[in-house]
Length: 241
Ligand code: NDP
Image 1 (cartoon, protein in one colour):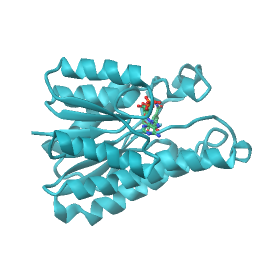
Image 2: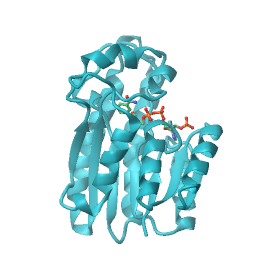
Image 3: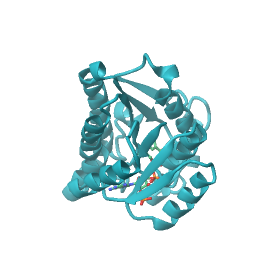
């Protein structure tokens, strides 16, 4: 039996990951911050696939939120995998125009939170398992003029993937990351630029934005035994960018 936690699993890339893992027979615990409607709709579609699905409203920038997520998962059963997917960009702006508070909360949700989630995951994966961190192609592009601090946070999560993967390899825990490129989700509109995906798609070597399901396919592979020899590394799924 697989029981997988997907943070931010109720919308966008996370919801596609949830659907794909459900199709592979994973029971799921899906975290989210506040969008009840998406949580309800995603849980309903996951249930229709015949697996268990619990949604947990918890802010992963808080210790209490992370504790709540893992406590609710423990009620479902032993956790076998964690997808550290929740993330946010908040606004597009050069760094010198970005308020301190926004830089801090960006790093909280994209780096500190995922590291604390990964630490909690190691504690519960006492029979081994897989941690997948969703980072970003921004980590190597640097995202000048858009969100340098977000890119830096994602680069930090790539580094944590490498270090933690080596640290826990002898416990039978694999730690891997996926760095998506431009993916068609609501993130771009909610950050303030609804046209961003259409505008940037022609710059991608493969000539289009990626779909959430294309990230989900990579997650499903990395979580499967077919990727049993893959750890402490980041897989870029970015159309060549
Ligand atoms: P979305 O904005 O569509 O979804 C984000 C999810 O994360 C939502 O479920 C949201 O909850 C949850 N979330 C946000 N903040 C918190 C918080 N403080 N506590 C708990 N949950 C939170 O994003 P995407 O699906 O586009 O992105 C998913 C991941 O992929 C992110 O890590 C992002 O950085 C990364 N990524 C995305 C790319 C893209 O082009 N879309 C490119 C590269 C990386 P709620 O629904 O309640 O708001």
